[in-house]
Image 1 (cartoon, rainbow, N blue to C red):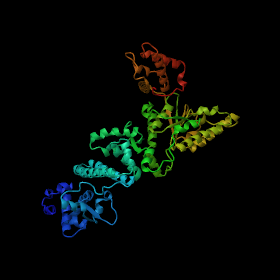
Image 2 (cartoon, one colour):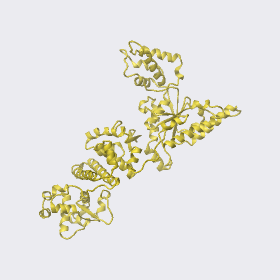
Image 3 (tube, rainbow, N blue to C red):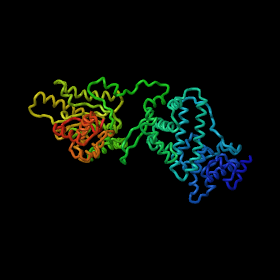
Image 4 (cartoon, one colour):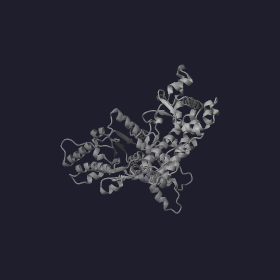
Length: 578
């Protein structure tokens, strides 16, 4: 009992034989010493209020400031709280301890007797099932979270990190030993090994899996929160970003994915989640997924209405007028999940409905309406079901009205079957949106009015994101105009925008004559679609030469051909060189 007596009689607690093994502060060790003295006098359970008052006195309730020290002793496992109900220490606030009773733990009493702490956690036995294994892994994530929080608190950084790191190392050793002893299949452990995931990738995956089980406020889905979890300093934070960038193993292997949303400060934040098939495999290892999520491209050939487009460009790739760009930025903010949740809380929006937006892009041909629609979809991580509205008039008389309904019925059917939210793009929707006839109408005019009425009815009840493109807004029927949330104008680019378009679309790997000046090309009033076509036509002409070098005059000749042929009405679209 030499160690016990040494601890009891130590005048300087930091010089006691077991102080270094306690991994606690001097003030916390003094609390333990007071508890040991009471234990030796027969007081097994000690009221916290009485203990603190005895040590620190009642003056100005100073003893209350030492409640946090007692909680740390609970977390370290040197004392335990006497309670009839199970208590989760991490959820107990220091003030809750004031009127409770505590006692020395068996682990601390063993330390006093043997002079050495337990080198490993007790109860090393095989896992009975994957849920028991997950319980230990989620505890592991809690410790990583605690270390992340401590790193942001300068005052308790060094001591707190040491304590938590020791607990984490013991837990990880315990998990490893229990896995070794387990003969049955642990789905998650097998998954980690199959995917050759390193420790940091495992921690990211486990953090996201814990969010799925706990249904929390998704605090660990944010990119910065996940990086903080696995980073010990600023250098590691920069280095570990690569684990969550496009092309990383976790994303490239289809294990996790993310959604991009504009945050309230104008930046883009990423919220990560585990891919559906992987999640189902981990959460329900004994069940085979009967209903698999059908992808749009597997169904698209079964219908003859829509073209499926998976956008390749985002809004960052598009050159737009400043006003148009600001409107689209505002639109993106309106579609942010935080904004949607706020509208639901206010009762403005139905909780069950998704993102709803009906948008008109209007402006001259070649100004980028269609490409911007695709780019908006890319920024929202959506696919596009595109319909060319000129097709509707090619249907024989009497069928047009039925085919208008068929557009929306087919779209809704595809969305429900695939459990996805594609964007519906109606290109060249002028004939749908134009003013309706009145008075003495011919049969064709009556049919056209009927078709428009059905279209108006479908727009009214449409759920999701719909984008209609048109050349002329002034001809739109007022009834249609009121149904669209956003009317976004696409103007012909000014000289500054044309310079940006030329610079973006000119072939980067092509040879140019000495003194080649884009500034001179940007002086010609052209749309983005025209610039794209001119560049392609020029490239074909230069490519067949023995000395294939791009000269400024080559482009000027093609520009003149465009002007002479009145290409302002061309439907050629696109802002990027393919």
